[in-house]
Amino acid sequence: MSRRTILGALAALTMLVAAAPAAAITYGTPDTTGLYPNVGSIVVQRTNGTYAQFCSGTLIGPGVFLTAAHCTSYLEERDLEARTFITFSPSLEGAVLIPVTELVTYEGYNRRQSDPGDIAVVLFDAALTPEGLEPAALPTLGYLDGLDLRGATFTAVGYGSLERTNGGGQPVYGDSPLRMYAFSGFNALNKAYLRLSQNPATGNGGTCYGDSGGPNFLGDTLVAITITGDAICRATNTVYRLDTREVRDFLGQFEGVVLP
Image (cartoon, rainbow, N blue to C red; front, side, top):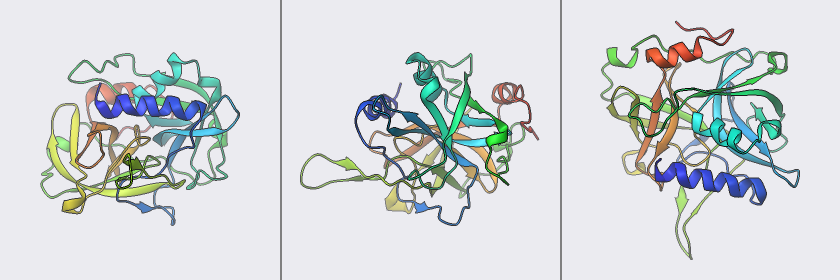
């Protein structure tokens, strides 16, 4: 498990008992015009009755919300399903919360493998989907393998922490209640992962704590979900491919999910 994932889990545990929710994305732009309405957040009710932002995700079918397995497995292990909600509100302030009916973690999830199977879905009552909300378009089998990705620009979307700031003490990660997006350049591709640059020195932005499970788009196609990256959220966004046979077999079992 990467350092970012470990620290993210510890931060999430802290949020559930005390801290205010962290939200946004590194070197990004608020989605004030609703460019990504099908991107949402997993929200967990704390023991004191308030709420914490936990992970990000995307609507991919009626009542089917795509996210990361390390998000859902964490909630399952701590028996938090009954306190878990999702929202598609562009701001977490006054967000409309939708109760979760089931967490489904990919049965092959194992972070010790080269292909960790770090994918899951959160199910909810499709009738509670905001009016007019359309699922994101998924890629065809082997979609990324058939492209020349040199110079390609990907868009990460989520509600996770802002970029780290220094000065006057311990470095801190900023927060904001907004859904945000940022642009990332291509670094590398292998069987399971796509690695993207989020180095601000080269004009890129990316993801941080709380963005796990959130989408990475190439054009209008949802090609990968955020899994991990470097601990200070300034170099690499490591995302899990959605165009593999294993992922398609998992997602294809859910009613209403369209696999092109």
